[in-house]
Image 1 (tube, rainbow, N blue to C red):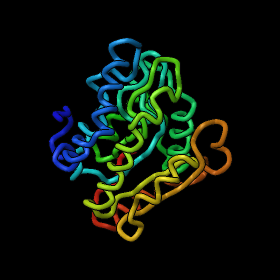
Image 2 (cartoon, rainbow, N blue to C red):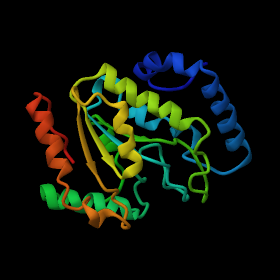
Image 3 (cartoon, one colour):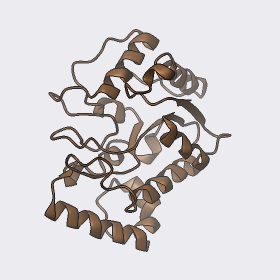
Image 4 (tube, one colour):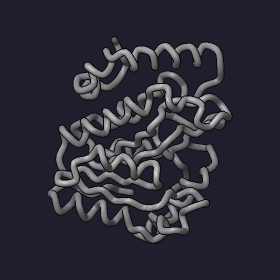
Length: 220
């Protein structure tokens, strides 16, 4: 199956694209885009992959669902386009960066600048119906993104995985902890951020690990 995705990812996932579950997923997603309002725009479904080729992945930040409000989702977990108000979880992420590294909150919530530095901003589910959170879960996306996580673990060295919240933390089973750094914290949502996301120091810890491996730190 011909999937429009960055070439390094295409080469490592080609066998996945031929599996029956993925073909069924493609049929479902195409039908949804044809008959409902779905986010992100179709050309941005694989935005995280296009901005962060496999050989440049330094950090993985795992989300669950794309944002389901108009103009928010653009294929990068936790990120919103310039001009869109910051969602509450993203506000808490920037609050923690301020506390951890002293960096002021940016003028917009577009994390493309992170993706272009090697931060792979992956949602477990890559599409969603407008205003219907979780509407594309259990259709095959999670099986696909689990394979993506496994292949990053297998084919790369010294990647930092930031697993925020119980859902993301379950993905630790897919990662070789001898080769990579896994950092866990509660989700940055206002419902849970005060339980340990705020104060987790993940951003400085990630940079310290990267530098210890001879890699350049992230400009958060």
